[in-house]
Length: 510
Image 1 (tube, one colour):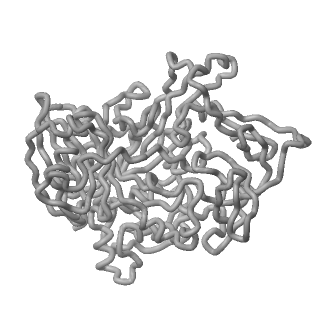
Image 2 (cartoon, rainbow, N blue to C red):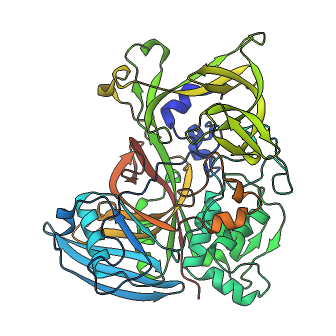
Image 3 (cartoon, rainbow, N blue to C red):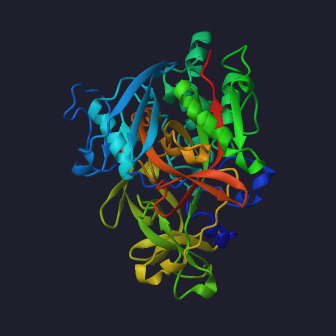
């Protein structure tokens, strides 16, 4: 990351390897280096209003929020109905509050919500609180890893699975999202009926199918993945050419791609989002734009601080060249810990390495190369004579009064799926009517920088065993680049903007 350091700070403190798209309409975005994905903080809030608390029925889902008990007990009358879809139930709830009428829709359910769960979802929305729905039967294709892949460095472990720099699935958020869309709309099930030998029995298998046919690269949209699955063909990032898994159907007859940077309207995307009620699905690509703050004593260097989702702190990025004769450079084994810090490790046995503090790591997670001490027992990896790392800032160092936002759309950096919405029926403008989106995200439960020993050799099972979740994010309409109207997913980032760049809509299968 020797080049474009300041650009990266301004555009986004999260540099996602799931960077998608290749349009000439987003030149600024294309200058960003394609790096490993950085997981957004997705820690579940304390469990309130979960399962069948005080409800007449129970189910296998949990509805989790950190809303206080007082708000939980607020009564907002509602009506609820369920529609059958290609993949399960669609829940549609209507309720009123503060003089407004709302419609809440959530798709891909195997069972109905309890009365208490619906009240919790309404209360969390009206209180502006985070909300997570969990359940084994929710439609959620999970990645294996966020960062554990070739470009991090030279791994000491190698097998048939890790045999190339592009191994793994860290850059395949587009495939994870498309898998959820294809399963939700019934196209995957139709393909299974038409092709009995298709190695797919659930949404995680479908995601794995993309692993088989595509190398681990970004620059793809959900529309590309859907075209490939339904109609077949080849792509520069595909390892081969295969016939469509649903012969006789043209994906263009059933899907649409809305690209805001290319002049499409967010209203087109919102139309697809609202079609979820009728069995359709919508996939988004989003731009992740952290707010940057100048440092009080470093204006001349244009150094900024931004919130790091892993460290849960404001950090500044430091990059510098190291003299090749510097005696502090050390060739060693090292790992990345859960915060993304580099730690030196020593070999304990053939499969186990240990840090100076005594924490053990499986050999799968260990790299070898030149590292340089940066204090507090931490190191930076030396790459061609250059080191680059994040340093935590003290609050008094940061000028919070002069935050800088660089808002742009581009192609999007990460792909997610819309599994539901809350709309204000009294708002006439489409962008203003969307008040919240229920998001399914292939990244939020993936392994980060390392994985436990038992996951080695069981990558597919590890993916399937990850929690299935849907998260609610409030939305707000926003105009960027002077003319482009889009939606911001409020609180997806701790401090910044999450802007919709593209929408892929998919009709239900015939």
